[in-house]
Image (cartoon, rainbow over all chains, first blue to last red; front, side, top):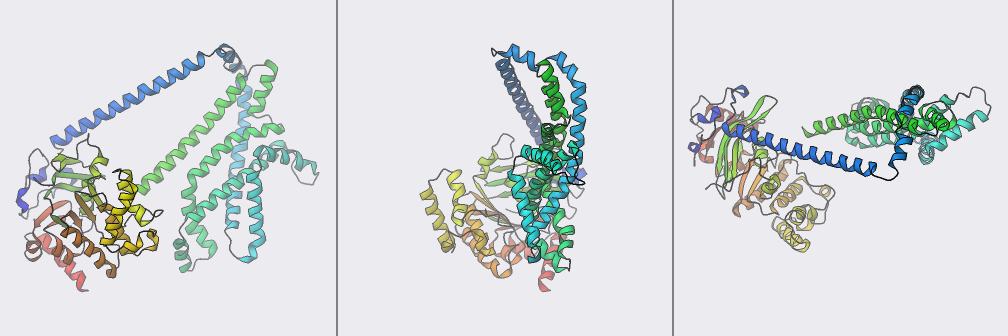
Length: 309
Length: 247
């Protein structure tokens, strides 16, 4: 068995036509020289046909599920009343401007709270990573902070901050309800995000730290230039997940009074005994969270792809 | 009939062809050694045979059946092949024994007792009997690679693919892995291996293939390829390897 058994049958690839053993190598022409063989064209046709088939199976089964769901809900005995109270187009149009107006406040709360959460979370995570004994009090404080604010339900934190802080009558403590809401959300979510950051920092292999320290970088420089860039990239998807959660939890601020989307919907519902305004609020929140959720998916897919290469 | 027949295989990445019309057939019990510079397509060819990559053209037949057919179940094909990687890829959360018995038990539905019995026999044969209960991170590189070879062997494959299995090992550990491969050859295993160990290649191969930039340039017995290469490119490559050895 020497090089003589090259088979060119059924293969239109230009390379295989050459005789082995000659110095003018066939195929040296490179990628552009590739001409798909009949075999490959047939294979690609087959692949296309299969993907069309599995695509149509998916479409049909999806439609079937939707039809069944609609049929099941619309066929229920209480459906006419539910439709009247939750899906009233007239009420929908009437409530939309007010709820949308309130929703802009939600967006504002979210946009202010989010960077604050990032800062608090990162600081707490960094403090928890300090190893020197002098920092023990700081470290203990950080641990206590995460333990407390991860343990207490967000709605309770909002109550405590919203009604407790102003009651202290201290100079300089804000009394504006929106500001208090932002503070409460930041405290609550800062604890979660701190843990996410800490997990990311811990996931960077110790050899990376060793390499950085061996070059003479200080602990701070190592964190700033070597560990954090890798850690943040790794935890971006769970971080964004927490932000999606924060976006909708801005509605909890309604409990202490600001006229945001949920509160506006409540006011409308209370005067008409129709719950369609809640649906308006729900739709607005979905519209806000979906882009961020897709962005999260995109980041996850990208890092997956990078690792695959 | 050849055990494995590769015909006109092309593989492209981002408009660049890594394999450019490879033809190669491997008989049962034959040991084929692929040599060539890094990036010449040796590893890609092995990955194509294991269906870890889909070929962009051409066909591969195993036991006379085309495995590059779109309708073929890749898992079914891989059941009949073993592949060993440069970086071992042992599962770190399992003991050596569990690493070896995973595929026989879950894929081939062998009972736990029988699977473990067979695994212990293999461990005994390759001198790792005392490491059955150890986790991979407690083993030396050579031991890990031997465990990885045993793991690939445990499903009784028709064909073994070894992808630079000694490249990640320090020289002192290379010999123990090579002796395992030697033992596989004596057992009649059909193998395709890529390696940078030219001396070992010359000793163990029945056929040596030289790949250059995605083309199978030269193919012959070790004697012929190493002492009287026909292609100038082969001569050049062998000379550069020898030079590197001398330094």
